[in-house]
Length: 459
Image (cartoon, rainbow, N blue to C red; front, side, top):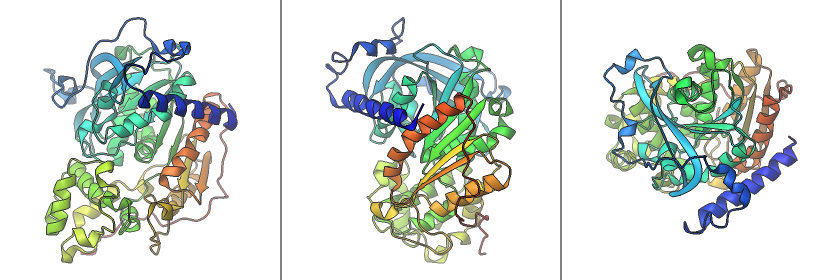
C-alpha cells in the first residue's frame, strides 16, 4: 500500500471513530453503513464488564502461578468491544495469561484480541497503548470492556489507530502493557507483558483463530513505544519463539533514557507532571522507596498522583522541577543510589539490539508544547521525549548489526502532532513488511545523538 493510500484509510478511520464517539448511544449504530455489519460476530458476545473487583483479573487456580510457562492462558472470555462506554457489534476476546514482572516474578496479566474481519489468522499486529497511568483501572482491557475513567479516555481515543489496522484485515492483540500494578515506565516489564500476550493470543488454548505460525508486527506510540521498543529488544532472549515470527516494529515518540527526560522536562509548562509520575512508577516497579527523599511538597504531589494518569498530570504542575519535589540534599537525583539503579534498568541504550526491521519517528518541536529546555548533553525534543537520545539509539542499532532501521525526525512537530504524522506511515510500513518487501534503511544518514551511558551515583 502507498503512503497516500494509507493516509486516506487513516483519514476515513478518524472520521468514523470520531463519529461513533460523538453521537448518542441510541443512534451511534443506527446510522452505521451496511459495511459495519462486518464487525458483528456470528453469535452475540457474552455480556461482561470490567470493574475494580472484576474476578476475571485475578488468578485463582490451585497450581502455583510459577508452575505455568510464560504466555499460558489462565482464563478466557468474550465480550462486546466498547467505545467510550458504548457497546459495539465487534466481539473482543480477553485473556488472563501468565507473564513476568519488572523484578522477574511470575504475574498474571490481561490482553484483548480482536479477530480479523476477513477471518485471516496468518497475520496480526500487537498494538501497544499509550494509556500511561498509575491506575490499573485505566488499562485498555477495562476501557474495551466498558469501564470509563478519566484516563481511560486515552485508550478509547486510540480507536483512531486501531480502526485502520482492522480495516487492513489484521488480527489485533492489545495488551495491558503496564501489568496489573500499573508499573508506569517500566520498559522491561512492558516487554514481557507484550511478548507473553502474543504467546497467549496465538496459542491453541486462546481460540482466537491464530496459532504459532501467525506472523506479528509491533506498533505503538509514546508509552506504547516503550512497550514496542523493549519487546523488540528483549524478544530474541526472552521469547525467541515469538521473535521468529515478528516482521518488524513501528514506533514513535520514544522514551530512551529516563534520566535525560527528567532533566529535559524539568520546569516545562505542560510535561513537568510526568516527573512525579516517573518517580512513582519507577519506585513501584522495582520495589524501592523514593518517597523518603521527597520534600513535604513532593510527598503531597506523590500522594495526589499515586493513582493518577496523564490527564491528572499534564498542565497541572507548570514549572515543576525535581528540586521542588526533593529534599535539598537530594537536589541531584543521581545522589540516590536506588534511583540510579532503577533508571539504568529502563535505559534502552543498555538493552540488546532488535533483530527485526524498525520504523522510528521522533519530533523535535517541543517548544510548541511548552518545553523550552536545551540541557547540555541532552538537547531538545518533542516536549517530553529527547530527540538526541532517539537518534543515538537508532545509530546504535545500525552500528550493532541491524541496518533495517528507518528513522524519521520531524523538526517542527511536537509530541502530540508527531503522532498524526507518524501513524499513516507506520501503517504503510507494516503493510510492506507483511508483504515481504525489503525494509528501508537510514543507517549512515542519521545525525549524531547523545551518550546513552548509564547514570553514575554521585555518592
